[in-house]
Structures are given as structure tokens and as C-alpha cells.
Length: 378
Image (cartoon, rainbow, N blue to C red):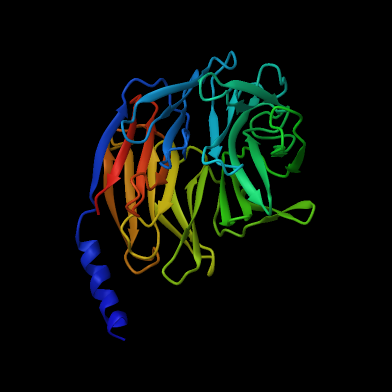
């Protein structure tokens, strides 16, 4: 009973303090910084930071944060996305990347879109090799998903094949099954083609029972593998006019909320309570809203939302803000700057990089050409 009575006091005390994040610049000379991933590259037990830049795939080693090249010049056009996860249990991540970024070409697979699995050499040869996989035009986002004892690389193009202005064929969302021999053939299947302008996805669920939340022009869908089949279902979101970014988080009562940026590259940060279907707009001053990270940064027992945008808004402000629910939900909230005008945020990740149990924020900046860690000092 004593702990129960103390909870409101502790919560109010924590919110009375300004959140504390200490900035470390890892790189100030990237080209674009399309996508970030987190995982142990070298097997030392510490998570590293991986970056898909315009022409290079690189990683920054946890500890000294030295930059290392994995591979470069995969295609004529830019790299665009990266996914990293330890799939075989050897303590080192497997890496896939998307490239040949050409969003204006929706028909020609030679000129638009590419998917590669990166094959490691032995420890004495740091060179990696790229194994090309089947792809659709406008490859845009990818994530690893685990269901049972199988792993899948789920790849989402921006457009359907032959689309113009977001109209036409649906986007072919593809799941590639990770094989015993990654250098050999990969089986793949189209698991959804019902949406258009699909901008990003989130992987949710328990270990070995993960599913996908997919955001796009038509809103949000869940995609999950049940038995041998992939099934999808629309998520009922009141007042939704299309989603660019999305991340699921936990509320104080152990239910979930969904944070979104609306519409694609939009101005609005919105949160939906997935239990009562309520919609709350937290912020409407994004410009080119492009990234979300959801985690319990402050140790409150429920999640907060970090949002990043990459262009100055009407107040000449850009960067990263943190939104904190005051009562365990977002009916009341506070907002704080994490980085004001120092990060044209292209991508944003949350991960505990030093093992203290508190997630850091990691961001890459497009116009600012930088990679930063925001160390959690709360």
C-alpha cells in the first residue's frame, strides 16, 4: 500500500525536472544519413550504430565510436535503408540494405529499387560482399521479423509498380525467408499489396511472435503470419488521413498507444489509444516530419515519444522533441527539446548503448550532415 500511495508523488517529481540528455557528435561529415540500425557488428557484446548513407554502409564501434566502412557504391543511385539483427545466434548482426533509391521511377526494376544481403568474410578479411535479392521498384524500408523459429526480411517499397501520384497498383510488401545458406537462394512471398504510398513500418509483439504495423496513404494495417499464411487487417484510427511514420508504445495501464506522423512527411504528431480508439494531436509544427522513437526514457513505467523533423518550420525551428504523458496517457502532456536546430532529423532510434538500463536516442541528420548520440542522463 505504501508503494501505491507514493507513485503519484514520484511521478510528479520526475516530470518537474527537465529531461537530461548529453549530446555526443559521432560524425559531422555524412552525406544524407538515410537510415540507422542498432546491433553488435563485431561480437564484443555491445551494440554498435549502423548507418545507410548515400553511397556507403558504415558502422560506429561502441566504445571508441570509430567509423568503419562495410561496403560502398552498391548501385548507381543512393542507398536508402538498412536492417540489422543477430539471426543465427553468433552474437553478431546479419545486415540487409536497400539501394537504387529512385522514387520517381515506379516501373523499371533495373533503374529503381535494390535489395541486398551483406555477406561477411572471415575475421582476417574485413571486406563484405553483397548478395542481390529479388526486388520491386522504389525499395524504401526494411525490417527483420521473427515468427517461431524462422526469420524474415520484410521490405516495403514506397509505390506500387507503375504507380503515378500514389494511384494504381498496390505496394508489394515482400517477406524473404532467411535461409540456412544466405549465399544461396532466398524464398520470398508478397504478403500484402492493398496499400499505396507506404512510408514506414514497425515490428511489434513478443520474441518469436512478431508482427508488422504498416503505415501509408490508407492509414495503418497489421500484417502477421498465422500458420503458413500472412494475414492483414486494417487498424481503425479515427480521423486518420494517412500515416508517414509510426511506432507503438506502452501506456500506464499496460495497454498500447500508436504514435504517428501525419500525413507522409507531414506536420502533425498524433497519438492514438489502441484500447479506447481516442485520437490526440500533440503537435502541429513539424515540417518534413520524418522520424519517431518510442521508449521509457525517464523510467516512468510507460513510454514517451521522441519526434524528429528535418526542415525549419514557420518558427525557424527543427530538430528533436520529447513528449511526456502526465497521467500515463497523453490526455495531458509536456514537451521538451532534445535538440533544437542542431539536427535535421532523417532517422531516429532508441537503444541502451552503455548497459545502464536507460535508452539513449541516436539520430542522423540530412541537411546538418551529422550523426549524434543523446546519452540518457535522467
